[in-house]
Amino acid sequence: MHILVLNAGSSSIKFELFINKTPGDFKSITSGLADRLYLAESKIKIKIGERKVEFVKEMLDHSTALENVIRILVEQEKVIENTEQIKVVGHRIVHGGEKYASSVVIDDEVIAEIENCVQFAPLHNPANLKGIYASKKAFSSAIQVGVFDTAFHQTLPPHAYIYGIPYSYYKKYGVRRYGFHGTSHDFVSKAYAEMIGKPVSELNVITCHLGNGASVAAIKNGKSIDTSMGFTPLEGLMMGTRSGDLDPALVLWLVEKNNNDIDAVNRILNKESGFLGVTEETNDCKPIEDNYDKAEKCKLAMDIFSYRVKKYIGSYMAALGRVDCIIFTGGIGENSEMIREMSTDNMESFGVKLDTEKNIGRFKKSAIISTPDSNIQIAVIPTNEQLSIAQECAKLT
Ligand code: AMP
Image (cartoon, rainbow, N blue to C red):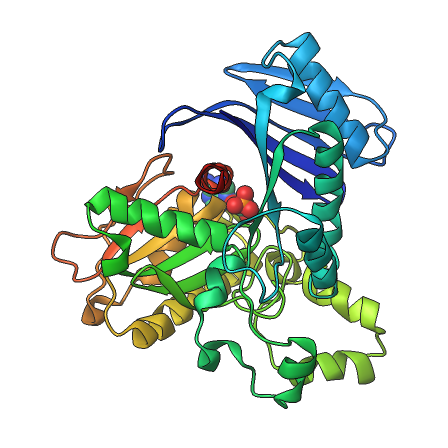
């Protein structure tokens, strides 16, 4: 069965096509990105095996981009014979609110609920909907599946998801912690269980998804019990351009004293903060790590980032009681030995001992990087959200 996974952003569509023959056997046959949509020089990049194909043309909406991807895959590259071959399309949906604790087949009711959640994810959900509409048009006979970033965290207990503000805001408007990156936290916790040969339901792990967006989750017996992102993906760790946790009164100060309107404050906290805000140069962790010893602000940014990861690890150790493993994933988690080391150093008295030799390098495959006598293991598990979405699609269909 051919399963297409789509991740639609406001001006892009990321895609990957899998063939699923038997349960558990997923082969990626092509992947790519259509971006700069709505601009004169929209671009499609497709990887087929080792080969790369590029196509540049003005594409003024998601549908046109998808039509061009299909034309390249069917007519030009003959990766598939026709659109009917694709039986299922899996969509990454950022916000599913409280309604969805697992993936669903998309029907009109689901679309209405995703629309209802636009209020919580005004940048992401409208883009995800564009992807769904484009896909329904292009693959009219395929089953469309929605996989929600928030779903995995629907197991949080109320004491972890209710904020200390008037309860009526939760009852009336659904103001609460939702958590994000659920597909990745779920995927790496299960991959770790598989790697050590134990059921995930018997394991307690702390998963650190560290990329341009970053979050930590406490997973007890396979279920998320707390996570650092909250009502929106702004809370928690410091990120590429997002501030993460701060004193809520600072938001008031930015508005009142510094004369910013709501849009300006939103821009400061979401787009101008984090690594970019502290270094005043870049949101990209790699050059910041490379300049740790050369530039004071790079050192400061790395120190802040890793200190906050460590604080979350510590608090989730307390929340979980017993921890089997601390898992690193995402672009930074998989590639930055410095961040992994700084986030776990000096924790021997808590039973966390990193093997600095094993920690060296970038990881394309899962590995244990703690010492054999570490009470709590430390692992790097490369995430694969596309594969995880394809697996969800197969499960549902
Ligand atoms: P993601 O959002 O998961 O794709 O992760 C992107 C982040 O990973 C960026 O901040 C990159 O700079 C960072 N990254 C990728 N490779 C490395 C590396 N070798 N060392 C440090 N950070 C890296």
